[in-house]
Every structure is written in C-alpha cells, then in structure tokens.
Image (cartoon, rainbow, N blue to C red; front, side, top):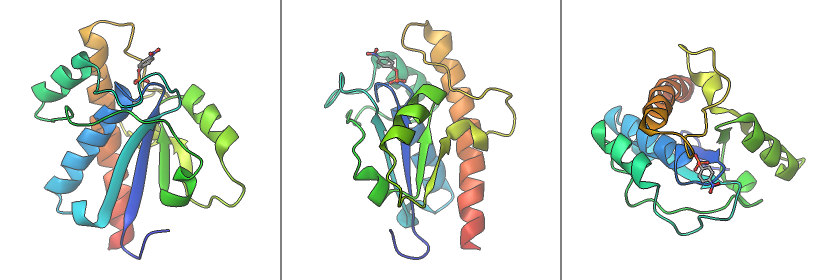
Length: 162
Ligand code: 4NP
C-alpha cells in the first residue's frame, strides 16, 4: 500500500474506452486543480479485453475536450488481480463491473471496492450508464455524473489528509 498521505484510485468500466478513461481524466484534472496530484496515483482499466492498447472512443475524447479535459493519450488495459495490491480505491462504473471485480477480489484486500456514483451527491442513479451504443447525449450524461462523483471523491480523500 502507498505511503502515508498518498492515495491511489482505479476507475473501472467494461471497455476502458468510454467511462473509466473519462473518469481518470476528470478526476486527474480536479486533483491537479486542488494541488493534490502529487499525492495521488490515478489510473483506469476495463473488465473486458477487447480494447487493450486502444485510445479512448472518439466520442468520449470529443465530449471530454468540450469541457477542457484531454483524455486522448490514455490507452486501454484490462484489470489484473495485482490491481488489488496497488489501489486504495477501486471504483466501478456500474453494478456489472462491480460483480466482475468482486469475483477477482482477494480476501486480503482492505481498500474500498465500490460504485463510483456513491460519491455523487446530486443523482439518484447507481450506475454510470454505458454510452457505447448511445448517441452523443449519452457521453454528456457520463461527464455530468463523473464530474459530480469526482468532486465527492476528492472531498472524501482530501478530508483524510487534513
Ligand atoms: P466503456 O464502454 O465500458 O464505458 O468503455 C464500452 C466500450 C466498449 C464496449 C462496451 C462498452 N464494447 O462492447 O466493445
């Protein structure tokens, strides 16, 4: 586990080309804005293996860029059991992703494995809806939810530093 005053966060979705790279980009930007980036390790991955090495979906990259986030350099990877040794927070975008992660979770894991939207104050949704087969408005909704949950998560983590 990381040293004191250091927190590692892994965002997980299905393909690692839409939701979780967006979460990685948004949360990284927010942590940087608050001067907390140096005390964090932030990453994302997918439960599936179809998009290993791929850039984010162009619709996700465009929607993120509209709000000033550059996720174009991120590349897809698949979750690995070693992630449970490296991340304090492992946050799933939806309940299907969470089920996959719970099946991989080693008994000794003492970090926080849960749903990302637990940290979003202003939504009744449990899941970040998968935008892959939707239109552009699906990607806008993803950004709204992810920005809200990122703010809540950073507040939680920063509270632990004070
Ligand atoms: P993501 O979206 O899980 O948010 O990255 C998807 C990307 C690809 C696929 C499904 C969801 N796919 O079936 O290839």
